[in-house]
Length: 434
Image (tube, rainbow, N blue to C red):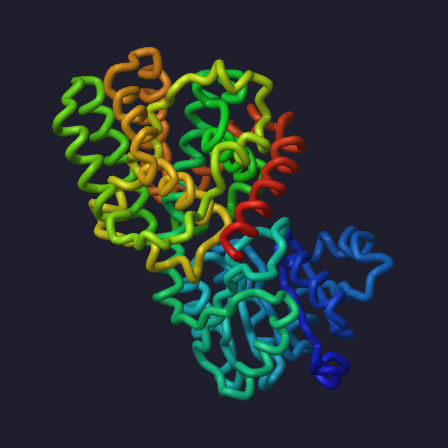
């Protein structure tokens, strides 16, 4: 398939981080003969050693990529994309296609419009997953911003080797949907990790954080913290829609907690029910649940605590998520075409809770009347506000510091949690795609 193009078209990737390498290796394995990568000039020699023995060619810098290649992807952090495009963009080959892999497209597109020559085509893309996830069946956003149909067709040929689900959007649509599907999802899991760290807790050692959807929370939170901080910071801080949503999530957490500690049951129940009806009330009876049942989810645990010793949890993180969606009038099911693996799981555990009357009732009772859980919930409120403030202030440094301090606390558990989490993701994805 596309044998002629594979022999002649030259593919270049500027930025050899996780996603840059992932793209390069995927292209090479698919039979594209001319795949080139570069990173910072000072990393040239080490990068050559990293790709030694492969069919991937390492070049000294972005100038060499830009002058040579027919399809070029900027795989750099969102906060640096403008500077990198400014530095290398003018050298872009006439008629080349330029793409980008950042999670926020507005600044990426603006930089390309500003610094790329007029005779260059702009078709950004975005794989809605990390480099450790099988791309088959995952969403891949393609944005025909400034290009001919012929160049779009070539781009789709190049990207076909991922076997992903292509979704055609504008840059504005992309940023709104990624804010809706990723920003608050990441904030919730980041807050869980920060709260556990603040309380000096390894949650799998505590009975209220064991089993079923608790396993999902723990595994996904640790999976996020095992990645690079900038993967999440760019999306949260550089996307103005994301800021609004993360701020509202922290407000929902706080509002619900205030009702909990005052034991204002009628108001609390009414707010939870209203939010649940808004998000889940329209689901048809034949809707296929996103998440697997408790018995299967129990397989993916870091804990050794017996099932019969589990204790109920207030699930403040989940109740606040649905309250946030309701307050912002967001229907998360509208964006399942662009779902990330983490968003799919987050939707799964919230849906699982709200469509299980017995579990939801236990959660409400625990939230209102189990005072032993209050210290954990209070810390969750504090950390949710902390993350929201870091994002609102636009502080990359503050975001990085908060992220890395928590990551360091859990670092020794990353290997096991990543292995278990990958199996869990694969099992849930298989359930969804059946």
